[in-house]
Amino acid sequence: MENTDDFYEWCKQSLIEDAKAELWSKVLESSVVNKYSETAYQRVIEEVDGDYNYNADFFGMTIDEYLEMNGMTEDDMEDEYMNALKSEMVMWAIVEKEGLANKITDEDIQNKWDELYQEGDFESEEDMKSQYTDEEIRQGALMDKAVDWVYDHAKVKFSYKISK
Image: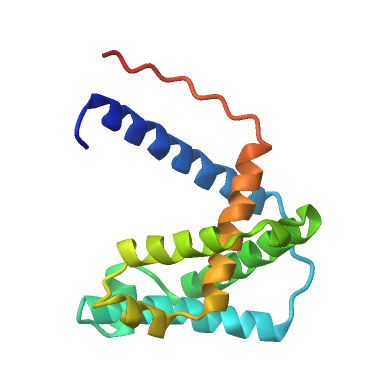
């Protein structure tokens, strides 16, 4: 940040991202999943376990040590799986109902790659691209579109004042 305007813009974007996360949580809380395929459930388990194993490796721990450090049990992991599955299913329902898949652009997908690279601990772009498929990135971009759609159609009121 080079000046106070940059700082204020950063604050605004941070508040917007927090609002989006809170709205998405509320959407998930009010959503009911009646059924899901075993294939989808197993895929989510692999994805979540992969993320947890990556984090454990990053800290030089076994997965059990990592879970213990975070105070997590097998029941907590089951909750993680179900939350991830529910989030994915709700995302796909919104994407389908609102026709968002047709609105995804190459720029959206490139932005998702860029975001992942900036947030990740990759040796190179090739390293990153070896760990993720184009479909995983597209799905991440669709998730962003679904969350943005929820935010754009919600009545969000920010009440803050920053004095200069």
